Image (tube, rainbow, N blue to C red; front, top):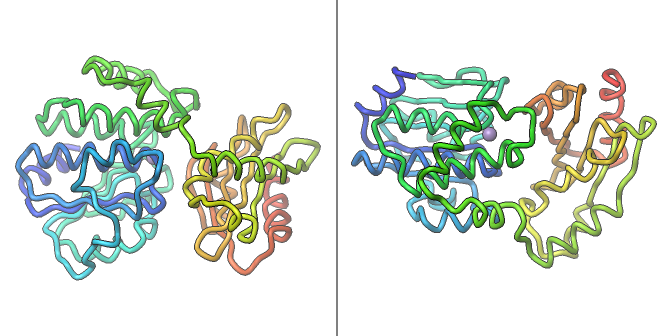
Length: 318
Ligand SMILES: [Mn+2]
């Protein structure tokens, strides 16, 4: 980590990226680090693929975080920093800019990360990249402002499912305690990020739930929505986040699957409760993630064919 701290201190003209389809950890990490770099007086730019609607309330306070629409892929930065991005290709369009940068840093907590940066810090024990941001920002000698604390808190509660997933460690809670000491309004933050929802999303959830099927003696719950069905609802693909949990929360289920359309293919969310390694299953199909939460994509296949492929692999672990 000290190499990374020194590199950041010595550099200027910095760009920060996170993975495509950014989640709360990605958003919280990019806001917290870019805020800290600005407080250090650095020229810093930050780009995400799009703004997830449930995190807009925080992004609005960090107007320098732009979307890919404004990313100039020909620009050469002195330093590019990738956060929460287990695979370089998951940066999407930003990957090209990352490659061109004169120096690169990769900070992440995905166990599958292959250290693609010039400087790397990958801690698979960290519950969220936001947890690493807390340590990094402290080492950069930047105080914990309300803005930084809110962003890191969002990152941590997003990846731990508000401290209920097994990745939550004593260190996670200690970090959260330090964030709470700044006086941030955590109940407002959690309501905005996790519970407030649109009428359209609630209606779409009804459709998704009605697709439920159970397989392998009730050990696998499967949800899906087709592109045609999705067209009937005014929702974005990020509005479908979290729906997968309904399939793994059924009593007796070990694995939950949600098959949803995204960019002309099917994106698969996989979750497990106790013993199935869904990262390994996603890995079989070119995806990745964590042991209990992973994802992959399929193109040119029907939902039935996808289910069959996934069940074949899941069967080996059940
Ligand atoms: Mn993460």
